[in-house]
Image (cartoon, rainbow, N blue to C red):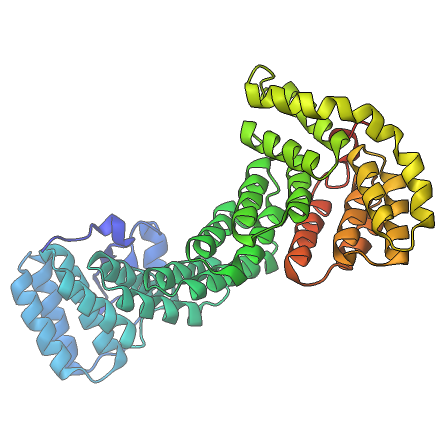
Length: 429
C-alpha cells in the first residue's frame, strides 16, 4: 500500500525511555532535543499494559515491527488507563510509518485521539493527518467528519473553517461551503488579521459556479470591499451583468460603475457602453466613452463599426448639449417628472453633476418616474462630485430588487479607497 510521507503528514514521532518510564511522543521537527526533553511528561500505565508496551518499543527499536505490533495488540487487550491506550496507538503509528501501512496508521491516529490522552496540539495534527488520509482515498464524508470535529473544537481557527468549507464543496454541499468560508473570513477579521484575497475569490467562485443566486452578490461585495482592484471589480461586475438580467437603463448604471472603477477593458466593453448610451439619447456620454476608449487603445477609429458609431454620435453632441437649458425650463412646467429625469440624465452624461442632481430631485418631487432609478443616479452624480455622505443617502434609499443590488455595488465603490474621486476621471469637467 502506498504510504503518505512523514513530511506530508506533518509529523514524525520519537519515542523513548526516561528513568524507566515511557515518555510522550514529540514532534521532532518542531522542537530541539533539549526543549523536547524538558517537556516530557509522565504517564499512568497499568502494570500489564506497561510491560507489553515496553516490549513493543524495544522490538520496534530493533526494527522488528511485526513483533512490535503483536506486543502492541497485547497492550491494547490489557489496557486499563487512557495512557495505556494512548501509548499503544502512538507506538502503532510508528510501526505504521515503518511498514508504510496507511490502514494501520489511521487506526493509530484514531486510537490516539479517542484515548483522550493526546495533547491538544498533537491531537490537532493527528486530525489533520486523518483528514488527509481520507481525502487521499477519496473518502470525502470521512474527511468532512474530521473537519467538522476540528471546526467545532477550534471555531476561531479560520484556516480549519476554510478547510471545512472546501470539504463541503467536495461533498456537493456548495451553499454550505460558501457560508462556511464567509464564516472563516469574519472570524479572521474579528482577530484584526488580514484575510487572504484568495478566500474571498474562492467564496465568489463557488457561489457563481454553483449558481447560488442569493450568495453571489454578498460574496462579490465582500471581495471588492476588501480588495477593490480593477481586476476584482471587473470580475464582479461582469458576473453581475451576466446573472442579473438587466434592462438598458440598469445596464447603463453598471457600465458607469465599470467606467468609474477602470474595469472597462477591451473593445467590446467600450463599444457596448457607447452604443447603449447613444440608444438612450445620451450622445454626450457616448462621445466621452468613445474618446476614452480610443485614447486607451481599446477602440480603433479605423474599424467600420466604430467609425459608423462615431459618425452617428459626433454630429449630435453640439445640439444635444445646447438643448439642455431649454429642457430644464420645460421640466419645471411639465406635470410629471419624466422630462426632469431625462434632462438629469443628459447633464449626468456631460459630467454636470450638480445640474443632474437638481433635475433628478425635481423628477422625484413631480413623480411619475422610477424612484429607484433616479435615486441611483443622484447617488452616482453626488459620488462623482465628491459628496460621499449625500451619495450614501441616495444609494441607501434604493431598496430591493436589481436596483437595490446596483446601489449596493455603488456603495461598495464609494466606501473603497478613492471611491469618491471619480468626477475628474469619468467626465469632461
